[in-house]
Length: 139
Image 1 (cartoon, rainbow, N blue to C red):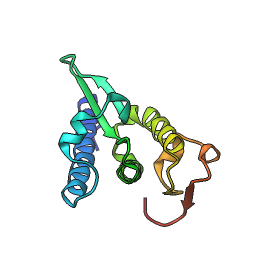
Image 2: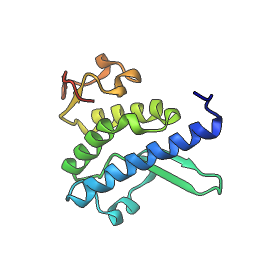
Image 3: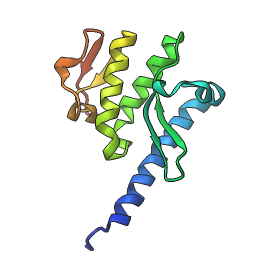
């Protein structure tokens, strides 16, 4: 097997991000998550990751909070945890921190699989009592 180049890793990152985006879009078409117009109106602080791209334009990934809509917020956070392993590696630590912050601030009652990769970036003891941790074979 050939040694992977930095370009190979970059292509894998892009592919993983595309998989995450596709999964989120599929969820949206089933009536879940948020309308694109609502997403566009969200403030930057509602997203797990906000950064400037190479053109200097603000990019926002992983919407987490829709104020005054706890059901959608819960769904966004749950999906972000479910698909956490698809996030770019350099985004995982700040995304996990933001997810934990949203869970606490919004007092979300959610379930997280003990095998979720998010536990590599947060301590289970830091989760509030509103979070139920389960152990199943699936991620």
